[in-house]
Amino acid sequence: MIQSFADWLVYGLLGLDSASRLGGALDFFVYDTLKILLLLFLISSVMGVVNAYFPVERLRHYLQTHRLYGLQYLLAALFGAITPFCSCSSIPLFIGFVKGGIPLGVTFAFLITSPLVNEVAVAMFLGSFGLQATLVYVCSGIVLGCLGGMVLGRLRLDAYLTDWVREVQAHADAQTAHWEGGAVSFWQRLPVILADAWQIVRGVWLYVLLGIGVGALMHGFVPEGFFAQFMGRDNWLAVPLSVVLAVPMYANAAGIVPVVEVFVAKGIPLGTAIAFMMAVVGLSLPEATLLKKVMTWRLIAIFFATVASFIVLLGYVFNLVL
Image (tube, rainbow, N blue to C red; front, side):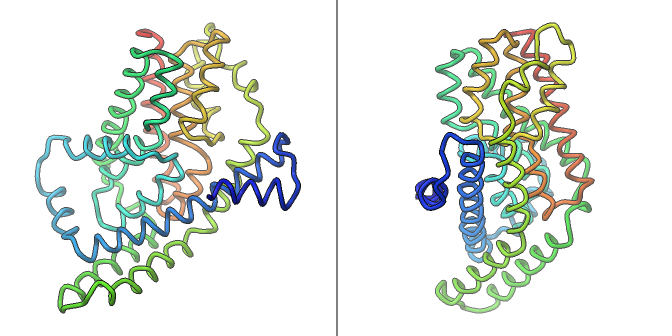
């Protein structure tokens, strides 16, 4: 329905050509903006219900005090793998996790894996590159999420969350404590939960517009062939260059698989192409813009640098084994 509305607005009402760069960019902007704002409201509402009825404080305490030998990161990464979100669409759920007080390293494991691995991309990857390459891609995406979450969790970066996050967390904790003190029905709680979800949307809508706007410009006006010239087999810096060049882009895994197939057909090593794909879907300027409401620039830089380093390493490993 959202895509149909975006198509009607851009191509029907405004009369732009669907084959034009401006039309494609504006359609992308309308669709992704509406989708992410709706996701943010729905997920914030669901997390509000969870905070009201389930012992999130106990889960938070359990994850922080029990030694699970990395299982919590694996579970978060697996949950990210089965959610069909792009990097920007994953952020509403990430905000929900942070709001609930789930440890930051665990939430990062989800945020890293969710855009990298989903069932549509896996199916397309299987059809394009075969079973072996698909298994390597899926397993490496999950491992990347686990390792990235572990590293970022060890760094204890909670101090670099923004004041807005702390206010949301404190409000959620105070509200849960108030509700636990008396018998309050679901229908009495629902208006408060929806109002809180709307407040979160109001707090981040500008960042959504800015982030998706950058992504729409890149989506509509940067030609695919621009990147291929830097990713050749003879360039030993091709893997890190492909990661750096991919960051300004914005697409989901299903949308970038055909581009990767074209790259490989032109002789670009599969490992370099996969590194480019992972950086496009897992790291992007629109994602950084959206995360700015939740994290300081220092935390965003640490997150991007950590994930980019792992992607570069995986790219070189893929070129050796694939």
